Image (tube, rainbow, N blue to C red; front, side):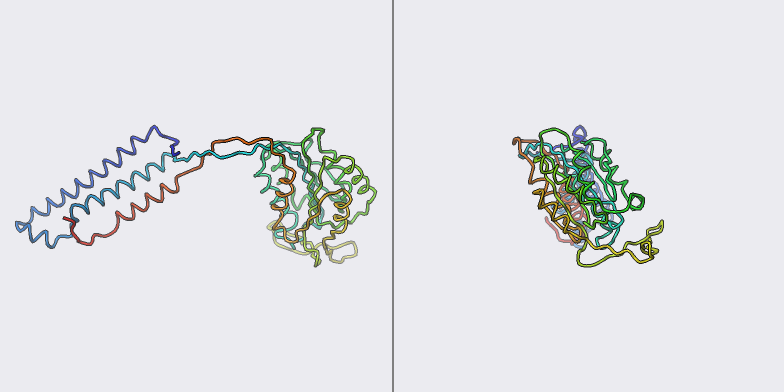
Length: 344
C-alpha cells in the first residue's frame, strides 16, 4: 500500500499539477491568437505554422503536468507498506576471538589479515539483532575488550572493534597464544541457557607453545557442551609473507625483522586449529583470501539459531525511485521537439 510521509500536502501537489496543465494550454492558445493577429491569411498561417495541433497540445500539457505531479509526490516522501512473515529467533551469545598478533598485519589478504577480519565481523554484526556480543583479542596474551556481553552494537561493540588497529598489534605481547584466548573466551559467556558460540579468527601461526593452556581450554569446552567453537583460519598457507612497516600516510617503508636482522616471514599453520576443533567437536574452516569470512560467520551462527515463532510484521520501504522514474519519463516526453504533424 502506498502512503506518504507528508500526506497533508498532497492537495498542494495536485493543485500545482492542475494549474500547470491549464496554464500551458492557456499560453499556447494565447500564442496562437497573437500570431494570427499578424496575418489575415489564416489558412496560409495554419499551413506553414509549427504550432502543435489540438491533441498535441493536450498530450504535451498532460506530460508536463504529470512530471510536475511525480516530482511533487517524490518530495512528499512516498513509501510502500507490505506485510511479510517474520521468524522470531532466540537471542544468542556470540564471542568473537580475534588474533591481533604481528603476523596478522601480513598483506597476503587485502588490505591485511587483521583489517579484513575486522571488516567482515563488522559487516556481519550490522545484520544481527537481539544477540549478545563479546570481543576478545589475543597475541602473546588475551584480553576481553568488553566487561560484559552487549546488545549495543554501534555505540559499544563496533566502536571498540574499530579501535583495534595496526598500532594496537605492535604493542601487545608478542606471539599467538590460542590457549589463553580460548580460556578468556570461555569466561566471557554467562550462565543463561541460550545458544553460545565462540568464533576464533587467526592465521594459526602459534609462536608460543603453551599447549598446557590449550589442553585446559579444550577440557573446559568439553565440559560446557552448550558452547560451540569455530576456528576460522585466515591467510595463504601456501606461501610466506613479510610484515610491512608503514609511515603515517600508509606507505610501506620497510619490513619487520627479527632479533638477528632477518626479515620475519609468516605463513598460516592450520594444524593446531584443526586439532583443537577436532578434539572439542568444533569446526575448522580456512579462508586464504578473506573473501568468504562473512559467509562463514553467518552460516556458523544460523546453524545454531533457534526459531521461537512466526508472525506477520509490517515492512515499510522507500518508494520514490519508481515515481521519480515515471516523472522523468513524462518530462522527457514533454521536451520532445514538435514534428509539425497536426492532430485536428
